[in-house]
Length: 82
Image: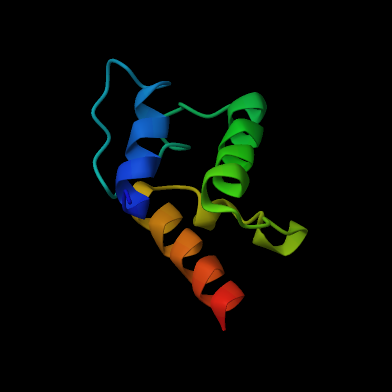
């Protein structure tokens, strides 16, 4: 089974073909994110990681960087299994 970071990197690479994202690069500050992409990112996380992104989870800090996305997904998965 692929780890969380690998799955997120694969998803993002489909959209950022000309830029290798660093684990702590802010995709919002880089100007890579529009509202459609943000919704696609949320839907990807819900589908691929089988979790629910609640309204309270829609904090930009959960989605700014690869590392923050990994932490978000892992915390949601841990909470679901507890």
